[in-house]
Image (cartoon, rainbow, N blue to C red; front, side, top):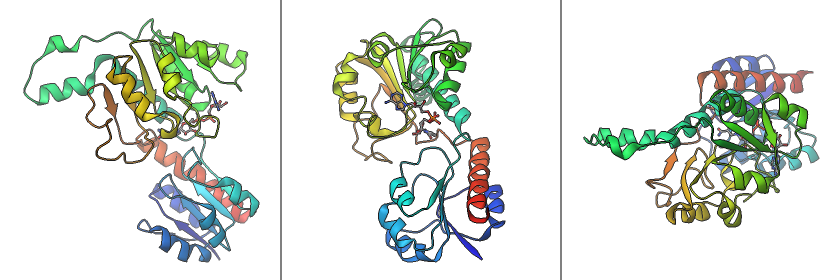
Length: 304
Ligand code: NAD
């Protein structure tokens, strides 16, 4: 009988699918030493993004044949170490495209109209209509770094709001971009032309610190940055400097170099920054499809 360890909350429907392949233990409270001591008893490990499936965890998982990730990015899993041991890594790549794209559009409009700041102002008893003169997204240039699944969904929605959308993605074809109404440009051109830049790339060696001090300073004066991809892609200290000296007008972040960010992070409480707690994939629809899509892959890997 296969034994499956689930260390993070996934949809009940996903757990039911997993039960087709064996017994399922849901243990949401495992610290690293406990995970290391129990992982040897399991054939499959199922995580979301908080559990760090390091080479050490993989080495301790003597029976491990499959690792399931209920979601997209697999940067919390040492895929190379898993592959070396012949362990299959299964994720749910299509499950949260729309959820992340819709949050990105929400952050874009939040920046344009300073909705969180306006909300806080009314809640504090003020009625400061003149403090909240925003700008319309129509006619503005949105630069998408990464035009994969999520970037494409953001592009469609931004085009519907009559934005000009440009993108940098070395893999995407001109035909595909044209279908989406997006112009493919170089990263330099994107950075210089965009009124708002939104990041939709995976965190890999070539994207780590892609938005470093130099790149941020190449951005148009008064432009905005949205990051709902991964924290390590933006140099947070350089971002705060650019916001403080007026080079950037605002930023909206769903992801951080360290999650949660430290309480004394200059991003917390910054008047030009919108912060949300890594909720890109947190919709009922995305959780359901992430759980079931991943679970079906795990069952196939264990029984197929
Ligand atoms: P995807 O693989 O479909 O698309 C990523 C695109 O980035 C690809 O087209 C790839 O060619 C491109 N790319 C890779 N390196 C690049 C580079 N250096 N410059 C420009 N483009 C580059 O992935 P996706 O499903 O669209 O997801 C994108 C990222 O969003 C994920 O890797 C994940 O980190 C993040 N994500 C965040 C949340 C959240 O909760 N905020 C949820 C899901 C995914």
